[in-house]
Image 1 (cartoon, rainbow, N blue to C red):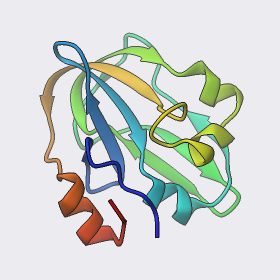
Image 2: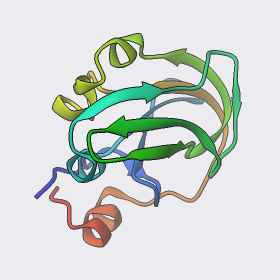
Image 3: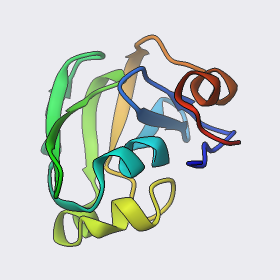
Length: 127
């Protein structure tokens, strides 16, 4: 069973949100999603300065099984992109809640998010 990090919030589309200082949030994809995708081989992320809107696509993740859209769980401006996952997308599989984070956003608002318990219950994850 895939791990769900209890300190994070999650979107219906399997992205996680970690609140940082002020309105800054880190965004990644859950272990539930990485398990379903299989080995991730390519990631296309929004560029720094890009405006993202909660619930809308902002990139994609390609695995050996499929290509999946990334959806922004927040509205705001991208402030940082994790170049390490662009160079080595396997980091997303090996450490989805740590080194495998995708991008950071100065969030103006959040879309609908689930607690870790709600997400785990709905998606068969384990806290």
